[in-house]
Image (tube, rainbow, N blue to C red; front, side):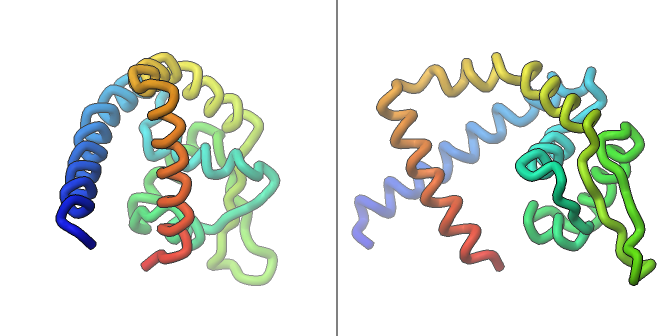
Length: 150
């Protein structure tokens, strides 16, 4: 890898992290009146892609890249809000299956509507062509990272 690409990658990583650090607390602040935080919204978003599919805590730890205590805390809060339902495994009492509820899908939509203007404003500040390149690059990186999980 040449020096120019290394410099560009370093700049991209630093800017990505700064944008994340600037946007995350603003999103969390907007979610607070809904009784949610960004981790919980991310979990609901994960479940929303296939609402009929059930997941275990262990599966969520792998997929979300959050440690087990963090997932458990978020899941318990979402269960208390009736956004997720927990079912015991019929064969193994140690396994609990989690599934999003219709209310959880409603809550996610409410969270998206609440945070949408902020997110659209931030991303809307980027020119259309640059935004398309950014989305394409993120998609490639997402596929790479998903295939190369640690």
